[in-house]
Image (cartoon, rainbow, N blue to C red; front, side, top):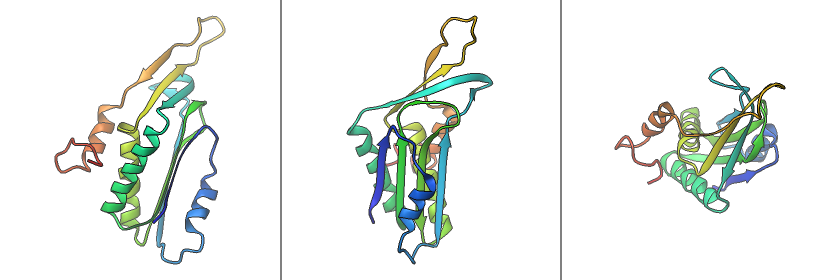
Length: 167
């Protein structure tokens, strides 16, 4: 099975990506899509933007490694992972994960597994920029760490409950 993995600045078209994955495939019985979207606030504080940075080459290889782990774990018939980087404003799409399988349980589980990895352990760095007002200094920018609740979700995929998902 060929997976599609792209890291890009440009927006993506979810429907087009699903159509590409499904084209001429009669064996697919379930497609699960997840689209992560830049929120307009962080714990009630308005955001102006979020900036995602990555290490080119390494990030693609790491995402591919986790897609391969998902393919070993579930009988997938297709996977697409597109992750944007750069400055994103509220309402813009950040990430797309599409998984296809003969049965819905496999497609759902693989999509959750991949998103848990992308959220907690993928080599991306996230900075949020709080919205200011006309009378204030320039808006504050803060680098963001993974949340403990996200780490707990990612840990459920490992027998040891804490080892990295693809290791």
